[in-house]
Image (cartoon, rainbow, N blue to C red; front, side, top):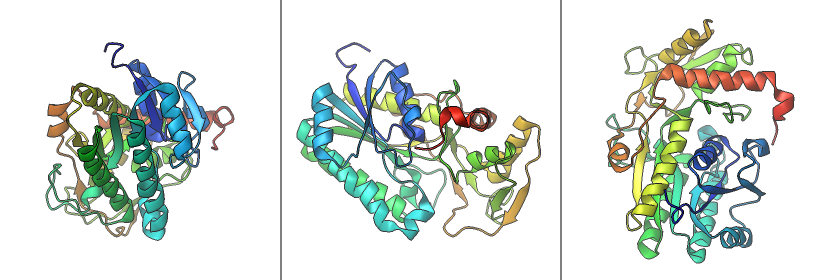
Length: 341
């Protein structure tokens, strides 16, 4: 990558779980990074010293305009937002504010400042309950919760804006993100997380007494829900490759799934945690949660054919092992990490 395209990237939400890993991947690849995060759920310590950090809101146009101008920002990676599906059902206006209205303000700031490239953190929740699995990018988008709608609305804005202005974009639809940086530089640290692998490694380190299994009568081989788990560091590297593609082909925009193309059931994940820890986590069978589909698995042919990205950590035990190492680090060094924003 020559210096002519090694531009400065503004990363929103870069103190959060996925955003902080994207910052690490950008720095590792030689990009210059500025992070903006309001620290509502992120952690200041999650942003490495090599990146510039600014505490602020993406819906503060003067601040965003100043950052873009000061550093000649050519690209934005947008991770800032709210991500808890049940909360979006209980408080939809929060999600339409944080995920849709604030994204609109950020996109407007980008257009006014002449930012050329925009990468958006989207979600498989845009598909709702899929009629067919694996899910392709051409599958119907019919979200079943405000979280999914709030993300899909932002995708739509980016499509329309890219047609009207000289800015291309890539929306990456994540499946189930898990794991932690293999070098132990970052990981999932938010209290009260609901993601299965995070919950399971918390149980393995004694932070929880058991793991709830919600539903055992799904149309899957063992009756429990199947999901496509992607290592957070692989996902972060996909963002760097997507940015490179936007720079190389400024007339092209993309919407792509981010997953491995195969799924694991809840029981298979818990079996993996048992293998990695040599323990037996207590499992409590509970009723299904409303709206949980039988299986969510990505068709990832598009990303593999479009980008030079290739998964390097697509092994369930590897994902669990990295998540467990991070959880043990948190448990053993809370005074170092200061587990609060």
